[in-house]
Image (cartoon, rainbow, N blue to C red; front, side, top):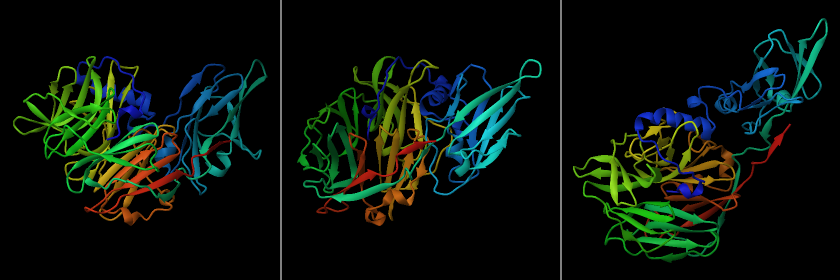
Length: 482
C-alpha cells in the first residue's frame, strides 16, 4: 500500500455520525476531486467575476466515444472583466484525429447577438444554445463578440478571448527500458510494498520461500541492500503495511498488528483487544481528534468487518459493518486523507487493492470514520481477474498509474482524479515493454521523487528466479494553450 504520506493531509475534527457521510463525501468530491455529481453533469463554471457579465455559461462536449466523458468534464473559467477571458486550467484530452466539438454557451441578454471568430478570421453567427465545430477549427482559440442594445439606437460591443489548453502529444506515452541493477529483491505474489522517502526507499516483501525481508535503496537504479525484519512472530508473513503519523504499521498472516519506525526493520507488537483481530490495513485518519487506523478484521465469532483502532489507547474504537463483495480486502492499495470546507470533518479514500474473488478493484472508496464506507460516485465498476496490482501516484501530475498483471498480460489504467475514474492506457504507454512478459508476475510500481519517471518492478514466480526493474519516462505531458 502506498499511503497518505504522498499527499499533504490536513487533519481536523472528524464527523461524529456516519449518517452524514453521503452529503459529506459528495461535498468533498465537488471540492477536492474536481468532479461533477457522479460524472453525470457538465462543469460549466469554475470562476465567475461580475463585470458586465455577457457570457454566463460555457462548456464543451463531443459524441466521440473515447473522448465523450473526459471532454464534458473539463471546467472553464469565465472572467467577466473589462477584457473578457474564458479558459480551461485542466488540459483537454488528446486526440490525433479531428473530431466534432459541441460548444454550449449561454448569454446574459436574450436579445444580444454573438459572433464566434475562429483563429483564421472566419466569423460564425451564433444561433442556438449549442453549435458544432471541428476540433481543428475551435481548439486553436476563438474570440466571442457580443453586441447588445445601448441607449437609443446605439449598441454596446464586448469581446471575450477564449483559449483552450490541450496536450501536444499523447499523455499516455511512455518510453520504457530495463535497468541493470544489483541486489533486486525477488519478491513473491504473497506480499510486496514500497515505502519512499525522497529518492530513497525500501521494499517490504515476502520471498518465494515464505520469509519476510526488506530491500533498501538510495536510488532505484543503484544497488539494493537486503535486510531481515525482526520482531515479527515466527512463521508470520506480512499481509499489509501502512506509514501513518511518522510510524510504520504492519499486519501479518498471524492476525497481529505491529509498529516500527518509518522505513524501519525492527517491529514491536501492538496491543489489540480480543474482541477482534486485524487482517488488512486500509489507512489512517483522525476520528474525534484521535489518530485512528482503519482496518479490515474479523470479530471473535469469525465475521469479516471494518475496524477502527485508536492508536494512542490501543483499543478498538468501533466495530463497523461487513465489507461488500466489491470492497478491496487484500492487495496493494493507495490511501489518502482530504478535508472539505462544506462539512465538518475529514475523509479517508482508498483506491486499488483486490476483492475477495481476486479481482483488481477499479473503485474509489471513502469513509469519515473508518468503519462505514461508500463508493465514490455510487456505481460499482467491475474489475479484472488479477495476479497483482500496484499503483504509482505522481504528485506533480496529480495522476495515479495503476498497473495490473493478469494470467496473460500487463494492463495499465490512468486516473486524473485521484482514483475516481480510470482510462485504459493506449498502446503508446507500453513502448519498450513486452506485455506478456509480465503475465502472472507480482508487480510493484512507484514514482521518482522528481515526478519524471515511473519504476516498475517485476518479482519472481518461483524460488531462484531473478527480479527485473523497468524505467518508464513520460513522453507526452507537454501542453499548449491557443
